[in-house]
Image (spheres, rainbow, N blue to C red):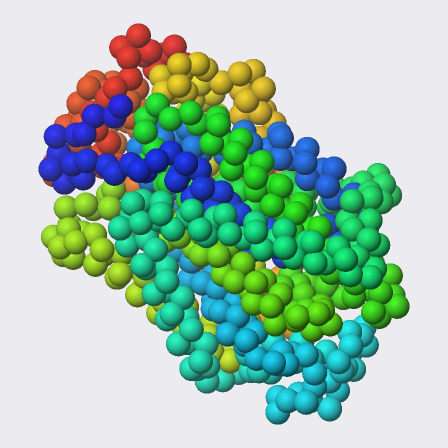
Length: 590
């Protein structure tokens, strides 16, 4: 639908998905990731099991689905990645798009380390017995025990394999240790896998997702069937699905549980990361966005619940073996996947088979999400600097290789002995701190400044009908209010990064804030740059900066012909006019 601009600096034609089902599968693969397997079960466990499902499903309806619908609409309509798409809907907040690219790049550098760990465990799972099955190994300490315990003076075989064999972790961030060469080589292997899955863009990614997005469900169902037959599994499943109403109604706990539910929906679907917006920009202009929105968001939540059944049935089995209630098991985030669940495998029949299947599933889940994060960077740079990129690298494939190589270099600190602390620091200040600010400004830019009426008109132009009253209310009131509450609560309840009992020193926390600012800083910088380059008085600048491109005065001309210095666009140029009908002038939307 969008015309290709006459500017030769822009990509002449934009590729599209070979089949629309490829986008749907890629979107499911992007949304469904490692967080579904460890963060969702962990939050359920910490929030009283089934008590968490009630607010979780409610937040899916009023927050997750509407905001995903919003992002896919903007991406498909503008046919650009998050940088140019958000610069188009609100020039003043164009920095939000740049920030989403920055945060996706930061996350892809350390997220691939989790894929590295999954590969390490996958390779180790072919050994008999499993290396975390007993304490008769060179890396085990005298305090090692073959059975789980809540004692702080002993550790399980699976804990010691994770800490002393794979990570060989140091005592803190002050001691960097040395490079773990085996992990480094596996990290390179992981990036090679990523590269060959995405180097042809949507044409290659679209083929890979048929396997990586669907195969994990085969493994999850197989694991569930196996786990359900284990003694004690039913008790674990009851803990998962039967609500503890005190958790929802207690004044002390209610706010935390409900905010956790909203945050999980938010982070799981990936609002604010720009990944799904970038991938939707390769859709056909008239693609049915609502169908994809419902498919991606609902399947994402079903996957979380399915993973919950798998994990909690294993918890029930472990509680049976240890003779303690499910609620007394010691569980935390990544440790759930790499410590607690491997420990459950060690006591299952055919332990090697289930371990191989589980870690191969983690690999598939991780690859899908990694595809999307790298694609954000590639798409945004190709949109903005197509001519320069092609001039330097000659082929897009070489440019993608360069992006993967740079990201691999940034991931090296995470595969040193200090790596687990670097990983925790980056994850805390990126996935928890930065993303909430990005989400807040993205929702403000799209729902309030760009406006619900414009967004609904865009949908009508693409699909022949406007958004219904439910989505318009969610965009206008519910989503902005919820995002604001989550942001305020996150600031009030903010706690410095820690790993287990280890609290990072002040300089380490400072490094964490620098990591957070590496993405957040683009929001004010983008606003300052926009106001600086726009012509007119300060009030004229402000008015123009709050007006979408296609609705600016003389919008039938590229923006830089209306006052950009030196013939360069003050804000990223989209093709003239966006093909908006003449009967929708800006004034009708205010």
